Image 1 (cartoon, rainbow, N blue to C red):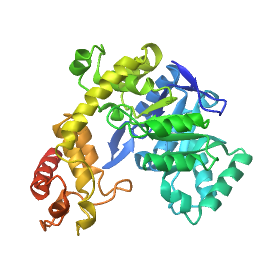
Image 2: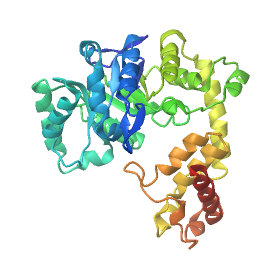
Image 3: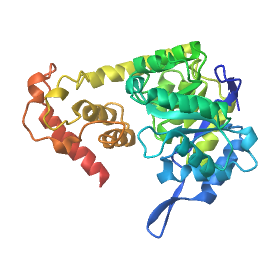
Image 4: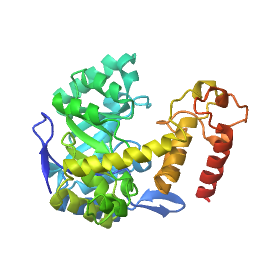
Length: 374
């Protein structure tokens, strides 16, 4: 396993991190629960392969992830850095929830305790100073080693959060399809933060580029997942790539890439970027994502997101990824409503600079993603 200095934290972190959001699940008496035996064996194998960063959260696996991670840490705690998160807006206060999470993890401290999914709104939150005081107090008492944040907002918001000067590391999305955080990641590194990226291979499902396309570009890989992970690791501003792995096959393949396979060269990265930019150009022929239509929809249909999901399906051929992208609409991370909320009023089409037949395409999207669920 290869390791990197994790910002200014003094930690050496493995290039591959274990995301404990997709632990193996099973059904017991009609209820979905974590298969503890498989999950713990998987985590132990990851530790054996040199993975020393594991990331969990209060909500993961219906609240079971932290408990299972805690059980897996027995005998490994001093060799593994633990990351979990405080979700602002939950019913428990900062200190109360942290203490509950420490009990669930069965540990005396958390190495990297994140404010979960914060963005620009955090800067003006009425309780921001209270949260930061609580975090500093917990750090002074040794309950957490480092204050961190995870992120799903626009890149400029990440820079504003970094400039608060309180955070030791950041966790954000970055992969072949979504390179929007590249400059913000470089800024984080320049400011001494450790950088972790989520979704490098989309939980094992993100293809990004088919293997045949990679080979046409002169890049030899065994799988599209290998290509996606090597692309992320080629970015010198990425310390750790976090992957949600729920099978030994995924784990072994990712660990091999992070241990033995050289990252892509600058020339290979440039070739991939050019290919992906061409795909984006084709996608933009359908919808540029300008958002001009959105304020005029009386039902708050997230048209841009729906069409983006359709482009992943139609242009990139990423069917599973497109399905997840679409069905995330209406979640706590993605505002708006899905295509079935359209009332066929036509307001959106009057403001579309591309003159896209939006209502017709929404019906196509609805038919596609409804059928995909069957």
